[in-house]
Length: 453
Image (cartoon, one colour):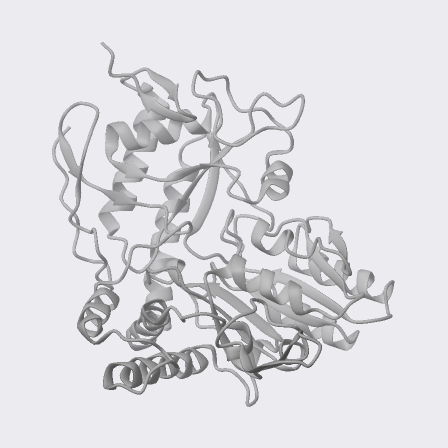
């Protein structure tokens, strides 16, 4: 195999685009990062912005010195940048968190007692599991097979539960299939029944313009590390009333306005209102600034242009896989459904862990295999069929009686060169036609090439 160089046609420059990785054969190739849905590479622009600020790093909301004031201004300006990026309404607020998972757990903690939460079983675990706590009731809805079916199912579920506070949680784009959900239509139904809506935009925000004002959702959550920003920051943005009425997500400095000892020896606390109420401790100013930098970069690049180019890659990928009869693409809404650059599939006769390991070891291509933290959805899409036997097995546990259930996910975005998708399709065809050139074994739960020859 010859050494492959990265193409320069990606619209946005990302870190790692020229990193070479070793193949099991001893050769090196430029790494084809096709696992954006897990963590997208950082934009060069983001890295440069953070590096320029780093010498001026100081405490936020804590000091009178110049660097502290500068860092505080930067932190709050980052909040305003995110507000603009999401097109928030007047009165909405931005709370910086660690990631989408953190954001949705925060929201779960502020819901009024007795709230009933509705979510389709197709959600990522981050938006499926946080609601399982005392004081809340969860209704999980069956996986729909069309937008119309999803809207009708929510309408029926809410009509059957008309009392008390209610929240509907929905993804904007599936982390398994990449398919877009009818967020505006679902929100209209929820609001007609008096329910509120939180949008998991972890997979949507990096690919499409998201307007809270236009979609009408009450809250939105997303992660910086999927938006081409490193440093472990996320966002929960939206209505302030339930956030201000609840106890802080974390108790500590910054969340408290005043703290005083009482005569009886107890401590009386007056909590802040606004974002500070749920941002206790020293804020992650670098993470917030990285998120804001990514928001600016995507906005300036133009989502129309980014989406048009990404659609070309989606079309290329779908057409290429459709020519390989052994490949079955997973889908809820059908092959014509609109999607972002995320696609999952299985290969007849192959265990997905084995296939993914061969893509890495023999071609320098990084994808993901498993159940993608969306176990109910993947099990539904696979229909209970077992993966082919393999010495590697699957990376995630199966249910009793299941030998192995797993799939392969390829995902990409604004930093992906065309060549990476071309190389991926070539690799899939060669593996299906000729098989792997190396044997593989399980090592610490991972499928790896066996070099003990």
